[in-house]
Image (cartoon, rainbow, N blue to C red):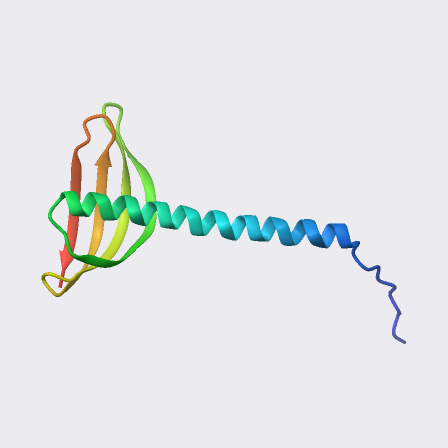
Length: 106
């Protein structure tokens, strides 16, 4: 014997709020990834990688100790000048504006 369960439709206002929140979340993720990519492109251009494309930022983490704090970016990009694909880490130290990078280009 199967039991029949009665279900109730969601109100239209609830569906509209859910759609708006999902769209806002997607817009935030796209904006954040665009800002990170442009920031890394500027940093790479200042450090000699002039002709680059396909810049991807996979993750960023806060790193440091009591004296120095910074942000570590995990990146990959194509260096069109040298015809190489590069990937690795870029660490930006906040207070001294130093840049540490560990990039492997093949």
